[in-house]
Length: 401
Image (cartoon, rainbow, N blue to C red):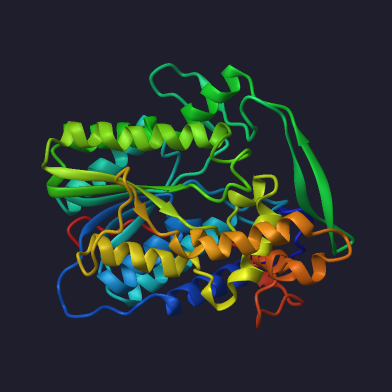
């Protein structure tokens, strides 16, 4: 037992401490939003890489509740220390495992660096021993660095424009009051671009496929998807036309390479999701202001990560036709990229300033969403009392159980 009175300890959008009860409540809410299963067909054996946060978490919860998914989730989360709580993803994973067990799902979790050979081998061994073959791999990793297991070199990603410097509006909070700030980022050099591609591109996704294939774990009709984003022309200079965009292009090129490798026995797609407030997206300059305006414009038309994960699963399960673009990407972002929505966001973006931000953008909603990523600002959670912070990582199932 380790009861603590916890304080967020945040600086901007980064929180030092996570709240375990709040994280549990967030997962419970997402679980309730996920569709219930239809019929009694068995679910696929799936490997979800990046299962503790963002779209990976949403896909895990929807797969478990709505599609009787079996298999393994992988995340890389920090344990509790004397000074800090465990990472938010640690607490989210613990609650996800409890819900999975209550639903009777044969699904376990592995905590480790998915970029490493050791985690790949352990995951493959677990899957082989328990299931034999894998039907689906969902790849949803956003990381600041990656150690190349072939060379040992550590690559660090950067969020910068390419070609020219980037100047734009940004959302900042001063003493809790939303303000429109000014941002200036210098263009990335070639080495920074290449390092970002090494971290956030498709190299590791390809390695996962190679490992599973080498061990005979790809089921007939195997499918794999990797989460991506395109976004608006408003954010294009810092996203799609920047270093991250170069990495996403490499991810899409990798999908084509995987399809060639599979030779018709399976298929790979990148999945273009819509905007979301995630721990990864909050690190991208200007995304906060853009997302706050987008939420105000879309209103009830906003699609949460669970909404989008449900749409993805329907397509993967064959319950709905694949929504593909001319580059063979699954598109979940139609609600965001609707021309009328984008026109309204653009008009607001061009005019928003210190005097209008309160009405032009859902800044309070955005700030609460960021807090909830770490278990804070969740309605109904009592933050004034001590909470149990020592939560065990879910145990692996007994072999043959």
